[in-house]
Image (cartoon, rainbow, N blue to C red; front, side, top):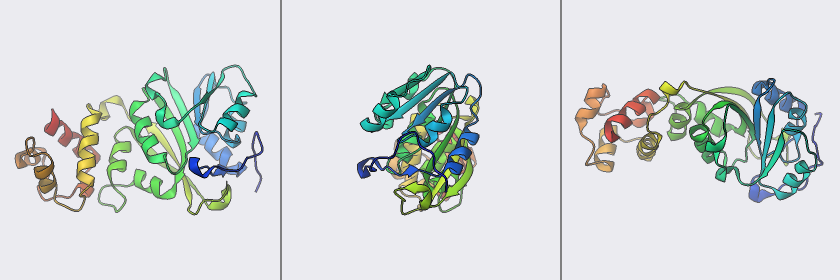
Length: 265
Protein backbone atom coordinates (compact mmCIF):
# COMPACT_ATOMS: atom_id res chain seq x y z
CA UNK A 1 0.00 0.00 0.00
CA UNK A 2 1.57 3.30 -1.08
CA UNK A 3 1.17 6.24 1.28
CA UNK A 4 1.10 10.00 0.81
CA UNK A 5 1.36 12.68 3.51
CA UNK A 6 2.66 16.22 3.73
CA UNK A 7 3.98 15.58 7.24
CA UNK A 8 4.89 12.45 9.21
CA UNK A 9 1.76 11.55 11.20
CA UNK A 10 2.07 12.27 14.92
CA UNK A 11 0.41 10.05 17.48
CA UNK A 12 -3.33 10.09 16.83
CA UNK A 13 -5.41 11.80 19.51
CA UNK A 14 -8.27 9.60 20.65
CA UNK A 15 -10.13 12.63 21.99
CA UNK A 16 -10.33 14.02 18.45
CA UNK A 17 -11.33 10.70 16.90
CA UNK A 18 -8.27 10.72 14.66
CA UNK A 19 -7.73 7.88 12.19
CA UNK A 20 -5.41 9.13 9.46
CA UNK A 21 -6.09 7.92 5.93
CA UNK A 22 -2.85 6.54 4.51
CA UNK A 23 -3.92 4.71 1.33
CA UNK A 24 -2.76 6.86 -1.61
CA UNK A 25 -5.08 5.14 -4.07
CA UNK A 26 -8.08 5.93 -1.87
CA UNK A 27 -6.99 9.54 -1.49
CA UNK A 28 -6.72 9.91 -5.25
CA UNK A 29 -10.22 8.49 -5.69
CA UNK A 30 -11.58 11.06 -3.22
CA UNK A 31 -9.91 13.89 -5.15
CA UNK A 32 -11.38 12.54 -8.40
CA UNK A 33 -14.87 12.46 -6.87
CA UNK A 34 -14.47 16.05 -5.64
CA UNK A 35 -13.74 17.14 -9.22
CA UNK A 36 -11.79 20.33 -8.56
CA UNK A 37 -11.83 22.63 -11.58
CA UNK A 38 -10.09 25.88 -12.44
CA UNK A 39 -11.17 28.64 -10.04
CA UNK A 40 -13.03 26.43 -7.54
CA UNK A 41 -13.23 27.25 -3.86
CA UNK A 42 -12.34 24.20 -1.78
CA UNK A 43 -12.56 23.52 1.95
CA UNK A 44 -10.97 20.50 3.61
CA UNK A 45 -12.16 19.46 7.06
CA UNK A 46 -9.49 18.00 9.33
CA UNK A 47 -6.48 17.74 7.01
CA UNK A 48 -4.29 16.20 9.74
CA UNK A 49 -0.92 15.10 8.34
CA UNK A 50 -2.07 16.09 4.88
CA UNK A 51 -2.79 12.96 2.84
CA UNK A 52 -5.63 14.67 0.99
CA UNK A 53 -4.06 18.12 1.18
CA UNK A 54 -0.95 16.91 -0.62
CA UNK A 55 -3.06 16.13 -3.70
CA UNK A 56 -5.26 19.21 -3.39
CA UNK A 57 -2.40 21.74 -3.20
CA UNK A 58 -1.32 21.51 -6.88
CA UNK A 59 -4.88 21.69 -8.27
CA UNK A 60 -6.20 24.85 -10.00
CA UNK A 61 -8.44 26.14 -7.18
CA UNK A 62 -8.79 29.83 -6.41
CA UNK A 63 -9.09 29.30 -2.63
CA UNK A 64 -8.23 26.38 -0.39
CA UNK A 65 -9.34 26.53 3.25
CA UNK A 66 -8.02 23.98 5.73
CA UNK A 67 -10.16 23.68 8.85
CA UNK A 68 -8.13 21.94 11.55
CA UNK A 69 -8.87 21.57 15.27
CA UNK A 70 -5.52 19.95 16.13
CA UNK A 71 -3.16 22.85 16.88
CA UNK A 72 -0.09 20.85 15.89
CA UNK A 73 -1.34 20.09 12.38
CA UNK A 74 -2.81 23.57 11.93
CA UNK A 75 0.66 24.94 12.58
CA UNK A 76 2.30 22.47 10.23
CA UNK A 77 0.00 23.45 7.36
CA UNK A 78 0.38 27.16 8.08
CA UNK A 79 4.14 26.75 7.71
CA UNK A 80 3.66 25.77 4.04
CA UNK A 81 1.94 28.84 2.60
CA UNK A 82 0.48 29.11 -0.89
CA UNK A 83 -1.39 32.01 -2.54
CA UNK A 84 -5.08 31.44 -1.85
CA UNK A 85 -4.49 28.87 0.91
CA UNK A 86 -5.75 29.66 4.40
CA UNK A 87 -5.47 27.55 7.54
CA UNK A 88 -8.35 28.00 9.99
CA UNK A 89 -7.65 26.60 13.46
CA UNK A 90 -10.84 25.49 15.15
CA UNK A 91 -13.67 23.02 15.57
CA UNK A 92 -15.70 22.22 12.45
CA UNK A 93 -18.82 21.91 14.63
CA UNK A 94 -18.46 25.58 15.57
CA UNK A 95 -17.58 26.86 12.10
CA UNK A 96 -19.93 29.55 10.63
CA UNK A 97 -20.90 27.74 7.43
CA UNK A 98 -23.29 30.58 6.55
CA UNK A 99 -20.26 32.81 5.91
CA UNK A 100 -19.00 30.81 2.93
CA UNK A 101 -19.74 33.08 -0.02
CA UNK A 102 -20.02 31.69 -3.52
CA UNK A 103 -19.93 28.01 -4.53
CA UNK A 104 -17.79 25.64 -2.45
CA UNK A 105 -16.56 22.09 -2.68
CA UNK A 106 -15.96 20.41 0.68
CA UNK A 107 -14.05 17.24 1.53
CA UNK A 108 -12.75 15.47 4.58
CA UNK A 109 -12.02 12.28 6.43
CA UNK A 110 -14.50 13.04 9.22
CA UNK A 111 -13.92 11.87 12.79
CA UNK A 112 -16.54 9.25 13.60
CA UNK A 113 -17.60 11.02 16.79
CA UNK A 114 -18.71 14.22 15.02
CA UNK A 115 -19.55 13.10 11.49
CA UNK A 116 -23.36 12.95 11.83
CA UNK A 117 -23.91 16.28 13.64
CA UNK A 118 -21.36 17.98 11.39
CA UNK A 119 -23.02 16.85 8.17
CA UNK A 120 -26.43 17.72 9.64
CA UNK A 121 -25.34 21.35 10.07
CA UNK A 122 -23.21 21.63 6.94
CA UNK A 123 -25.88 20.61 4.41
CA UNK A 124 -28.38 23.02 5.90
CA UNK A 125 -26.19 26.03 6.57
CA UNK A 126 -23.75 26.17 3.63
CA UNK A 127 -25.44 28.63 1.25
CA UNK A 128 -23.97 27.37 -2.02
CA UNK A 129 -22.54 23.94 -1.45
CA UNK A 130 -21.55 22.66 -4.88
CA UNK A 131 -20.28 19.21 -3.92
CA UNK A 132 -19.03 17.38 -0.84
CA UNK A 133 -17.04 14.16 -0.50
CA UNK A 134 -16.69 12.65 2.97
CA UNK A 135 -15.13 9.58 4.52
CA UNK A 136 -17.40 8.34 7.30
CA UNK A 137 -18.15 5.19 9.24
CA UNK A 138 -19.80 2.64 6.93
CA UNK A 139 -22.80 2.41 9.23
CA UNK A 140 -23.37 6.17 9.03
CA UNK A 141 -23.12 6.09 5.23
CA UNK A 142 -25.76 3.36 5.23
CA UNK A 143 -28.11 5.53 7.25
CA UNK A 144 -27.57 8.52 4.96
CA UNK A 145 -28.27 6.47 1.82
CA UNK A 146 -31.18 4.49 3.29
CA UNK A 147 -34.57 4.41 1.58
CA UNK A 148 -38.05 4.42 3.20
CA UNK A 149 -38.97 1.09 4.70
CA UNK A 150 -35.39 -0.05 5.24
CA UNK A 151 -33.88 -0.78 8.64
CA UNK A 152 -31.40 2.11 8.46
CA UNK A 153 -33.91 4.77 7.37
CA UNK A 154 -34.24 7.45 10.03
CA UNK A 155 -33.94 11.10 10.93
CA UNK A 156 -30.45 11.44 9.44
CA UNK A 157 -31.63 9.87 6.16
CA UNK A 158 -34.58 12.26 5.83
CA UNK A 159 -32.57 15.31 6.84
CA UNK A 160 -29.57 14.79 4.56
CA UNK A 161 -31.76 13.76 1.61
CA UNK A 162 -33.80 16.95 2.10
CA UNK A 163 -30.83 19.09 1.07
CA UNK A 164 -28.54 16.95 -1.07
CA UNK A 165 -28.60 13.89 -3.27
CA UNK A 166 -26.21 11.43 -1.60
CA UNK A 167 -24.31 8.85 -3.62
CA UNK A 168 -22.15 5.93 -2.55
CA UNK A 169 -18.47 6.16 -3.42
CA UNK A 170 -16.45 3.20 -2.15
CA UNK A 171 -15.69 1.22 1.01
CA UNK A 172 -12.35 1.01 2.83
CA UNK A 173 -11.26 -1.47 5.47
CA UNK A 174 -9.41 -0.58 8.69
CA UNK A 175 -5.97 -1.22 7.14
CA UNK A 176 -6.31 1.97 5.07
CA UNK A 177 -5.98 4.08 8.23
CA UNK A 178 -3.45 4.71 10.98
CA UNK A 179 -4.35 3.77 13.62
CA UNK A 180 -6.84 1.30 12.11
CA UNK A 181 -10.42 1.76 13.36
CA UNK A 182 -12.50 -1.22 14.43
CA UNK A 183 -15.02 -0.78 11.61
CA UNK A 184 -15.13 -0.26 7.85
CA UNK A 185 -15.42 3.21 6.36
CA UNK A 186 -17.29 4.54 3.34
CA UNK A 187 -16.82 7.49 1.03
CA UNK A 188 -20.04 9.29 0.14
CA UNK A 189 -20.67 12.13 -2.27
CA UNK A 190 -23.25 14.92 -1.81
CA UNK A 191 -24.66 17.03 -4.62
CA UNK A 192 -27.13 19.77 -3.63
CA UNK A 193 -30.80 19.56 -4.53
CA UNK A 194 -32.47 22.43 -6.40
CA UNK A 195 -33.67 25.05 -3.94
CA UNK A 196 -37.33 24.32 -4.67
CA UNK A 197 -36.90 20.75 -3.44
CA UNK A 198 -35.42 21.74 -0.09
CA UNK A 199 -37.55 22.38 3.02
CA UNK A 200 -39.01 25.86 3.28
CA UNK A 201 -38.64 25.93 7.07
CA UNK A 202 -35.78 23.59 8.02
CA UNK A 203 -36.36 24.05 11.74
CA UNK A 204 -39.88 22.65 11.36
CA UNK A 205 -38.63 19.60 9.49
CA UNK A 206 -35.91 19.01 12.10
CA UNK A 207 -38.49 19.11 14.88
CA UNK A 208 -40.77 16.69 13.06
CA UNK A 209 -38.20 14.05 12.16
CA UNK A 210 -36.73 14.06 15.68
CA UNK A 211 -40.19 13.52 17.15
CA UNK A 212 -41.10 10.81 14.69
CA UNK A 213 -37.95 8.71 14.81
CA UNK A 214 -37.72 8.70 18.58
CA UNK A 215 -40.68 6.32 18.36
CA UNK A 216 -40.21 4.91 14.87
CA UNK A 217 -42.19 1.70 15.50
CA UNK A 218 -45.37 3.47 16.59
CA UNK A 219 -48.14 4.60 14.30
CA UNK A 220 -47.68 8.14 13.02
CA UNK A 221 -51.05 9.34 14.27
CA UNK A 222 -50.29 8.18 17.81
CA UNK A 223 -46.85 9.81 17.81
CA UNK A 224 -48.17 13.17 16.66
CA UNK A 225 -51.27 13.07 18.86
CA UNK A 226 -49.08 12.90 21.95
CA UNK A 227 -46.17 15.07 20.75
CA UNK A 228 -48.18 17.86 19.11
CA UNK A 229 -51.65 17.76 20.70
CA UNK A 230 -52.44 21.39 19.89
CA UNK A 231 -51.37 21.17 16.26
CA UNK A 232 -52.24 17.68 15.12
CA UNK A 233 -55.50 16.23 13.93
CA UNK A 234 -55.88 12.98 11.95
CA UNK A 235 -57.45 14.97 9.12
CA UNK A 236 -54.02 16.44 8.35
CA UNK A 237 -52.81 12.97 7.39
CA UNK A 238 -55.98 12.33 5.39
CA UNK A 239 -55.51 15.55 3.45
CA UNK A 240 -51.94 14.56 2.56
CA UNK A 241 -52.94 11.06 1.53
CA UNK A 242 -50.99 9.48 4.40
CA UNK A 243 -52.39 6.40 6.07
CA UNK A 244 -53.09 7.18 9.73
CA UNK A 245 -51.54 3.89 10.82
CA UNK A 246 -48.30 4.30 8.86
CA UNK A 247 -44.99 4.21 10.74
CA UNK A 248 -42.41 7.00 10.25
CA UNK A 249 -39.81 4.60 8.84
CA UNK A 250 -41.99 4.05 5.75
CA UNK A 251 -42.69 7.72 4.95
CA UNK A 252 -40.95 9.28 1.94
CA UNK A 253 -38.82 12.40 2.36
CA UNK A 254 -41.26 14.53 0.34
CA UNK A 255 -44.12 13.54 2.66
CA UNK A 256 -42.13 14.62 5.69
CA UNK A 257 -41.78 18.03 4.00
CA UNK A 258 -45.53 18.22 3.36
CA UNK A 259 -46.38 17.13 6.88
CA UNK A 260 -44.01 19.68 8.44
CA UNK A 261 -45.68 22.45 6.41
CA UNK A 262 -49.15 21.32 7.46
CA UNK A 263 -48.29 20.99 11.14
CA UNK A 264 -46.26 24.14 11.68
CA UNK A 265 -47.34 26.69 9.08
